[in-house]
Figure 1 (cartoon, rainbow, N blue to C red):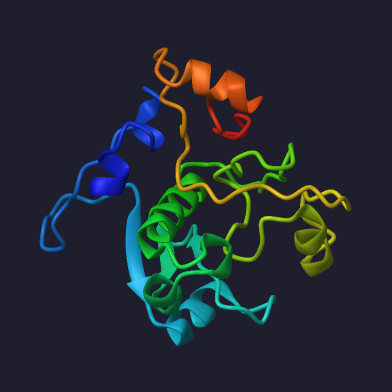
Figure 2: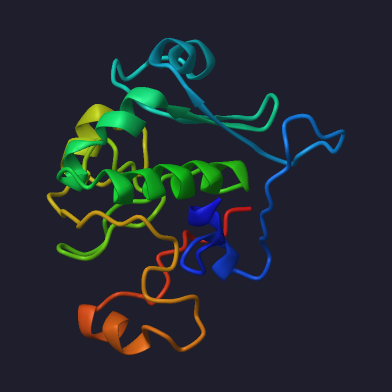
Length: 178
């Protein structure tokens, strides 16, 4: 709940809002987020990469987060489990709200787009080698880990200077594919 309530998350875009619905509620949620074992994650998501990944499953509108990754994190986040968990939620929810495509690193050293597969790598070439059919260019651009949709603020003027100094857009929000 805390990640999705942060203005640097998807709620930084006024089109989106989230609220927790109890499991025993008669109200049907638009999106479910579930923490699942690696085995269940593979059963739901498949295992084409032969790696521990999470996914969005349209059947049931489920963001399926891999419990092993939740506990151990991913090497691109260099041991920062909290930041990695925020990334997992924001990336998975991004798929759940309609951002199907992944995004490549666009500038070496910049914060990675939230829809980059940061679990696997922060480097375009490595991601291209994992799956050449994805949106990653066969180049050596490497980004820095990023947990947020709006890492420099939600387009409200906050963070504009920091974004300009970094040479990136104030919003790391993906191109609107919805």
